[in-house]
Image (cartoon, rainbow, N blue to C red; front, side, top):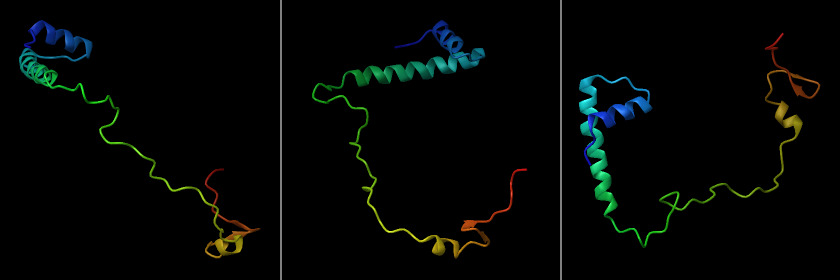
Length: 95
């Protein structure tokens, strides 16, 4: 399917693209080539292929949640550079 110069200019207008005359000719050839490739793809028999949103089946890759023992506050705060009243002490970042 060959596109005309007017069709390319219309597409450029819809896409809000400013094209020079050289651009119009270059894109006319490229877009026509793309449409010709789609015409070839239309000939492929896909009657036995179910419609899908992804070519590969998706599955959840996260592990199940399970309850596990946690560290005690004392163990956590042992690595703190500064500790105050059972909490991390940090420098103020806001006034």
